[in-house]
Length: 174
Image (cartoon, rainbow, N blue to C red; front, top):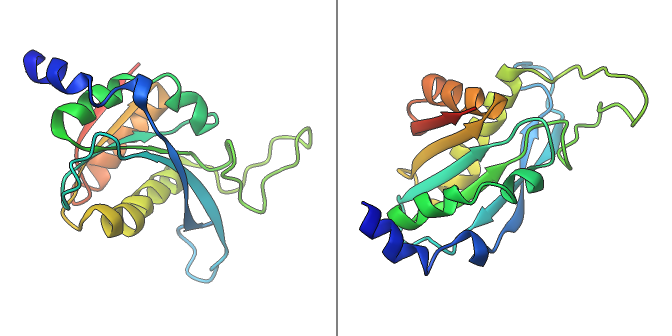
């Protein structure tokens, strides 16, 4: 495995990353049957390690409390994993952070009322990005591995547990 990682590191590396910003339309309240209001959830994609084949590996970072660009700048090992499996690297931003702001997000300094910020809402956002956006682009049988650290690590593990049909594995670190 170490030889494979070393060989692929030259072609696919953190230093050579090329992140593209994409947006997924998700519901503000994932659990309300009568509320169809949506907002744009940001995610970043790097296909530089991808072999171009459908139904391949997707290494997906489950964002947590901060702009997703901050996490993308500090997670070089995702490119090592993606290089070993010739997969896609994806970073999904958590709602209410960075640029992924529902209409009901409070203005800066307006207090801390986040009516739709909860782990179940966030996990549903991540599942929707996988099932609608990623599978449409990379294949219906894409093998998604969720990766996260700290609270994002818990989200990665919960995502795998709640959606084994979408996520084949999780790596949670703290």
